[in-house]
Structure formats: C-alpha cells, structure tokens
Amino acid sequence: MERMSLFLGGARSGKSRLALASAEALPGPHIFVATAQPFDYEMRERIDKHRQERDDRWRTIEAPLELASAVKEAGCSSVVIDCCTLWLSNVMLAERDVGDEVKKLLSVLQSSSGKIVLVSNEVGSGIVPDNKLGRDFRDEQGRLNQKLAALSDRVDLVVAGLPLRIKG
Image (tube, rainbow, N blue to C red; front, side, top):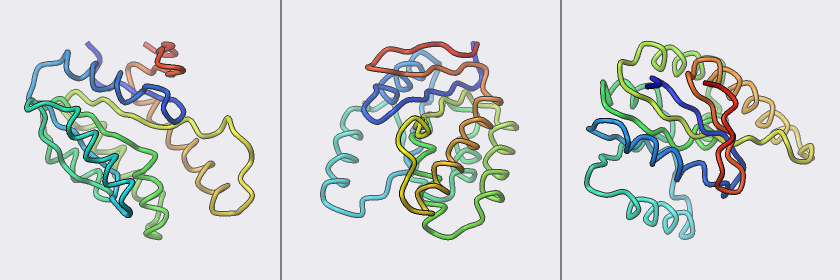
C-alpha cells in the first residue's frame, strides 16, 4: 500500500472524490485537512457541502496556512489534504516566503508515519496568465506539484472523473 498518493487534475475533474475514496480504503482514523477559507457566501456553501459529504469517520483540521503543523497534528492517521493549490494560494496572498513554507511542508510529509493522500490542481495546461501574480502562482504551483509527485508513491492525473496512473 502506498504511503503517499497525489491526485492531480483540473477544476471539477473528480480528484477530491477519488482521493476520499482512496483514503477510506485505508484503516482509520481518517483526518481531512481543509485549506479553503470561506471569504464569501458561495465559498461557505461549498465548504459546508464538502463537510456533509464526509461521514462521521472523518475529523477535519482547518489549515489554510499552517499545513505542515496540521500534518504533524494528524500523526499516524490516514490523512487527505485538500487541496495543496488553495494552500499555496493562501501562502502567496499572505505574502509568506513560498520557498520556506514548501520546505516545511515537504519535510513534514517525508517524516510523517501516516498514510497521506494529496489533492492538487494541474494549472499549467491553460492560458498564460495576464498578470505577474497569476504567472508567479502558476509557476510555483507547477514546482510544488513536481516536488509532491517526486515524494509520492502513487500519482494519478484525473480527467472527467477518470484516474490515469502516471506513477506507482
């Protein structure tokens, strides 16, 4: 069984659903690390809907910025991190040092004794963003995905709800 899995895909590709199903096949306890922040009504509704989709086997840790700490807190549980893309966006918008934050996260992921399932967006297949922040984000997300994929035992690219195994 893989210690760490990464599900990559575009928006609404089905990557989160597949990541949850993958984690539910592992022994519990199950921890869901949520990185979204409810800045508006629509996002609050999305978060509430996602919470309702998880049953009582799941405990949620909110970690919009302190993802490394949340993974440490989870310990040896089965952990789903959804999603690395929102976390990176939060880090950049908070003007934190991306390199330092990514190093902390990678270090904790490497040393974790739990089974970890990561969800991240593949953002490099679209148009080139028209502003510096957008281009910087796209570049940092691509670098992060490469590092997460290198650490992961299994990597699936999800398209239209179908996983394509690209590693493992």
